[in-house]
Length: 314
Image 1 (tube, helix red, strand yellow):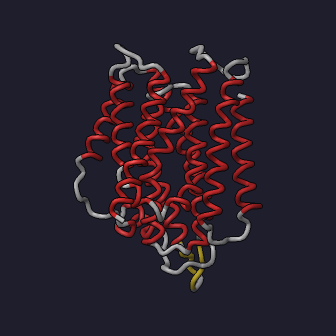
Image 2 (cartoon, rainbow, N blue to C red; image 1 turned 180 degrees about the horizontal axis):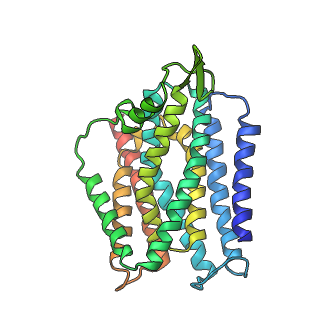
Image 3 (cartoon, rainbow, N blue to C red; image 1 turned 180 degrees about the vertical axis):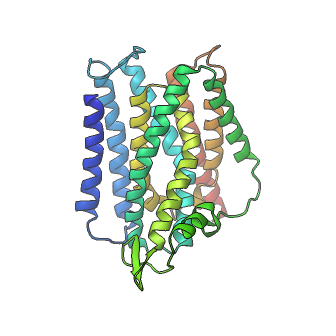
């Protein structure tokens, strides 16, 4: 329990420094600044694997399944890469939401900051209940595996679907029924008062829509990580580090997503792999290095093909 408290306190400290020190004044985040912070979070995420190795080689964390330190480290890195890769589509949706509600660039960081806090709470609940279900009902593993395969199949044959329109979403309609919505932003405020009536600003609406979309994406990513391990701390820590890096990655990749068009096939391959892994877990268990190697190779291949095709087109 002490390890969990220290971990959560450290994450909250990082977020407090982020909003209260490094981004105290709203400003447009340049590609250079976003790139630096993306690198910082990636380095911190991989460095934490050393902490994982140390924790699982001592008695500082509950380890009922007796996972060896080296295996725990690989499971953490694999879970982190899965969550990071599945966040690519999330970045695209965030860009669409900001464009739809015309959120000024200098206020986008504030929206994503509070969005991450909500995501941490929701992911924590999903992981907790997911672990409980898998441990209590072994057949849930097959259900999660089938769901991941269905998701991969749907991504592969989705065809030309209409573009996501936030203002026509269920969330937007529900918010408008509860509180009036103004189309004008009031600096970085989520609410404003007009003629003694409280209105929700586009920042608040964008925040809620992003939160709901994150919940939907979590339905894919959480079962995918549970295919790697059902250890709560490994699942939660790998998930959280990926989410924390997502914000900086958004500002770094938002304008370059079209260049990585073939990365979607990497995500399909990853979802298919972990889905199959869950379905055959009773008959064959892939070595940890196989899972990590497959996921890393899928991502590298998707990026490489995207860059090559982009270069040929130009």
